[in-house]
Length: 121
Image (tube, helix red, strand yellow):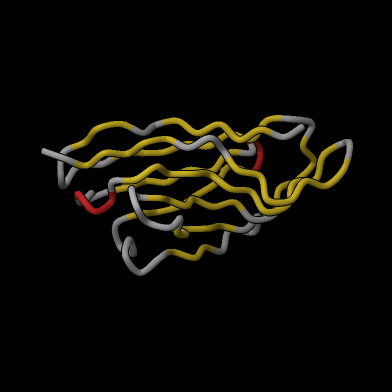
């Protein structure tokens, strides 16, 4: 069984910063792509940023230059550094792993439970 546990969400004022973390647990050999999605009230879930095991990243235009994704492969953890936050960044942020190889097999499309980020004065 693989679990993704997010942390670091909360309330922040516009212009502020937050750092989200997502740690994968289980008997993990490797994880291919990891990423962050978000879902605002009344909207569809959207990709924020993703990173593959080799380090290449992909970032949504709406957050480019403000958000940075990174990962620590040894810790099976992915991070999202969010700077210059705007009210429109308010959403539940979900961690995702697209392919996780464990001692019992391959797990595809694993999601975390989500962490709420609220940007408001």
